Image (cartoon, rainbow, N blue to C red):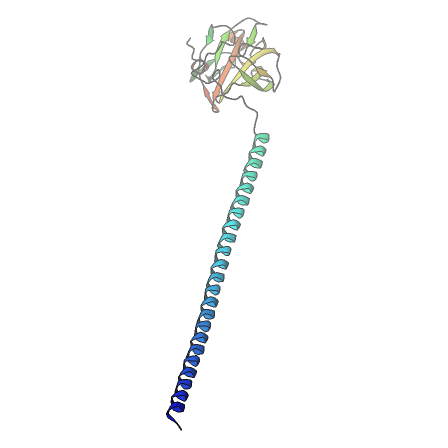
Length: 235
């Protein structure tokens, strides 16, 4: 074989080697690119699923919280509504009916026939000793008895000991009993303004020996108190 043929064969083999290397290199590039893309897609997919799940959880949590809050509010409103319909009607507290602070009228005259006392004293009508937890205001039969302040009538009844009695809630937990009436001009549920007529004066059966008068009792938060203190009056 001639020298020129040897060189030509050598060059062909070199070229063939280069082409093979290029093909291998291209294959490797394609292989790694495909794997990398698959991994990125898997990561992205996992991340997307995780984020979507978190968003769904957040939305579900907000929805559940809102539903619970709505249910709780509804239950509270229902309970308050039920409470308001079952509670005893009472006079709302206002600037004109707060015990010890606002102006009160006398229910009859200003003259006090017998004052408030928690000590036992002799009762000539009943012929025994008893406390007089009320104030007796002097008056004449058929004199008009008036409300000491704004209020709502909570009861009207006849008592064997105290005659016709009108009970008024004057607000601020102050309740008054007007005892010894001849007749009442109000009924249960009547709203009163200060000075409105309640009835006319009669007699107090258990105190007839003391003459005609209004037997007047006051209760603050369910406890008897001196009416003159409740009205900020003095004898």
